[in-house]
Amino acid sequence: MRADTGWEKTESLDTGTGIDFTREIPASGFSERWCIVMLQNELCAIDLFSGCGGVTAGLKKAGIKVLAAVEINETAAATYRENNKEVALLQRDIREVSGEELKEVSGMSASEQLLLVACPPCQGFSAIRRGGENDERNQLVFEFLRLVKELRPAFILMENVAGMSRGKGRETFRSAYQEFEKYYKCKYDVLNAADYGVPQTRKRLVLHGIRNDLYEMWKEKGVEIRLPRPTHISAGKKKKDCSLPVWKTADVILGLPEIEAGGEYTGEGVYNHVCNSMNDINIKRIRYIREHGGNRACLPQELALECHKGKSGHTDVYGILDMKKPAPTITGGCMYYSKGRYGHPYQNRALSAREAARLQSFDDDYIFQGTNAQIALQIGNAVPVELAKASGLYFAEMFRVMKSNLNKSTDCGVNNG
Image (cartoon, one colour):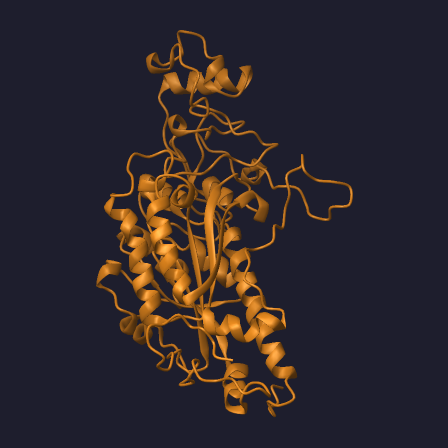
């Protein structure tokens, strides 16, 4: 059986092993040389459009070694470096980065298989932003495609806003997906981060892919291309026989030292617990809303904004976080009371950077660099750590199954112990 790779040429697919993946597979199974190489492999990753490092943090939690990353933004890159000193980071425009350069800076060895990850900027596809198909940022998905073709990784992972496949970006996504399908067996869908242990309702497009030749080799041995299975469930959907825990809620922000609007806690072991200031009228608003219903709809005329009078939409702005539910989507405005339901439930202020980071499932020792506005943008733009971890665990388990099947093959003649 010849593996259908999808590549235009039938040359050796250089994955660092020197093995020709397009050759005929013997009827008796895989060759001894191929098995020896595969059993020595390790799964590693390169993180494109890494931002402050949400994906990298999640992959590391899944046991995947991240070798290199690419990020153009200076402050996001500074945060990434602070927390991932072992990773080779290119602070560059990805349009100037080649696959050969990534191979060189990552130091990939011949015994490593690559998971190439990308979360291309997607603001033009977001339902809450202006923009559309022609937004220059939205074309960066094709830079990911270019590097996929240059590096030919074993696996691919892409994350983006839901609107990329269902809304403004559907034509761009369709075009890119058709190209991915030439080389990879893919699966994608819009997932809710709350289903994966993130204390936030956040809908994101997630795509998983395995290179066609590898899929053909293992599809009959239990390897399937799928998305991560949920680890949590909405309380409203949970049945008696369901073993999954219910969604985590916004109460994960509790337990930090109390601070006032515009304040910062600088005690030992607590990082980025800083919040923006609020004027007197907003302090009056947050107090009133907390006591009378949780969102701006309850405000009396003297406290209501002129632009809100007589309008019923966007009630999340000036809202108070509900500790019994997951937080709403954390955006780049997460530290601003006027930008969403980001009011603290008990203190007269908006979220601190550390509280917002908790809602994105970052660990408390993950340190962010930059001004308040820069940090809020980094946190809001990040892939939730636990969502990235869920994808990482899927790829790590799939790779383990592949190696396990090789180890059991009677014709391999190798000892992996």
